[in-house]
Length: 395
View 1: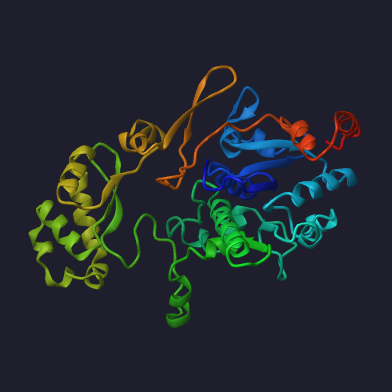
View 2: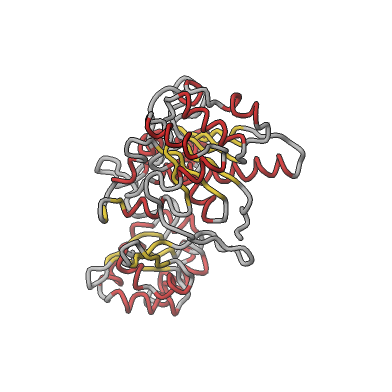
């Protein structure tokens, strides 16, 4: 019994932002009914690496969900969704603004039958404003929100982070917004409401002091590679065996401990370097000293020395490192599940860790329409009606 047991969620989205939001809700006990098109379902089912015709990403993204196929463009399909929403606490959708209204499934229509309904709406630009009708993926949100401009090296074009970060951040804001709206409804005597999450705004909210620095000093932060501008020393360094280590020795006492540990008492005791502003002014000199020390040693020795001096440092992990790491396993971050053919598969564990009511994986991403009949039966449809809907392509 998770902390969200008893909460019913209807997912009317596809790909990343909406489904990641409902994945988190499902991991903590919410009943999640995912509505998919009868014609192939969520495209994520076919994204990236496939196993026996199904995306491995899908198995993770859709874990703990029930799959129901419904044609949202059909009046009978829209009626099914209205029945589902009438019994739900949360509806999550990530279509382009206006699509739900075109299908007669906008918030006002659904809330007439269920005033306590919370609708999470995830889109590129939000439900209002001059850009609302433009299509927007996470990559566009990352670009507009300022993240891409500061990612990469100054002498090269901006790069992506390597994952769909904009979608994931927006999804988490969707979860936060849904839970706040439920508290307002259930504890503070309110009604349901709309949680409007724009991908570009979710990214922009992460951008630290970017805006006030520009406002006060007309300063535009640029790409800086692996270093942390204005905070030193904090960078990535190469070791003798060709590995990479991230070192964050930017605290005053940490800096002094590190310089002592690597045999640079001259830097440790330099009064100009006692505070961050002085170190930032000489960051190139510090990076050169630390880089030379790391370059003369293998990674294991570098980490042993820095760990001994209580300096925050770590190698850059690839997925093979993650799977082998004892801390990941000790914290339950490498789960194993079993596929229908008996093969075991590793999956990321659930975040965050709750001491009394932890989340978990009850089942992996379902087959397309696996739960259509059972869900429709729970709404009062009998076998003959379901068969008729299926013949007409409604489900």
